[in-house]
Image (cartoon, rainbow, N blue to C red; front, top):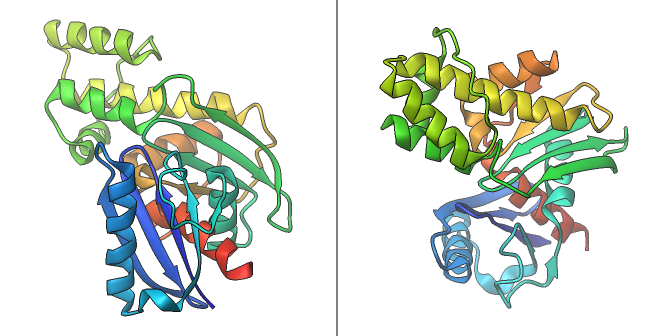
Amino acid sequence: MVSVGIDIGSTATKAVVFDGKIVGQSLVATGWDPKEAGHKAFQEALNNADIAENRIRHIVGTGYGRISLPIFTNRVTEITCHARGAFHLHPGTRTVIDIGGQDCKVISLNPDGSIADFIMNDKCAAGTGRFLQVMAGILDITLDELGTLAVEAEPVPISSMCTVFAESEVIGLLARGIGKGSIAAGIIDTIAHRIQGLAGRVPLEETVSFTGGLAQNSSICGKIGTSLGASLYVPQSPQFVGALGAALIGSEL
């Protein structure tokens, strides 16, 4: 049974075609029109899989834009989808950390992969991809450069978790002549401490799987792992884990 999972996030939309294994996938920018982004990712994933649309039995939507597309046969929360996808990729997973564009989540799993507990920060941009994008923009560097600069620099403390106040703080540090590397390291430390605070409110057990686009940044992975005192398992394509989970749920309907 061929199924498709589509994860419409605030910054990126991901689609996975599943036929016993991943046979196609696509990632597009969500932009201002999540409905259009969902359609585009769906068609691109089908083209990559070389599968006709009439072969699809279920299309499961997840992410903040899951209400956008009428083609969805089912809609499932991103908590459930990230847990399902992470456990499928690494059955030893007991904790899932996901940092999205506008929220971050820590999900605790039972040994069978079912959700034991979770906590989600969706009230502000603190600790999210959007926070890092804003900070990188102030430093006039890319997210990849942010991680590279931070690797060997001594972090300068960033006291505010609020994006607006942290922005002012970073501008002030630059005015004082503090190096971009030290500021970048401080910013990533701030993210790691935020995740540590969330993880302290749910049962945190090894193995910890790190999902979402930011998991591709080795510097962020290292800082979070150090803060938690845990090694992180990062899937080969961490940004697709939610869409994969949605596709897996569709294949089981």
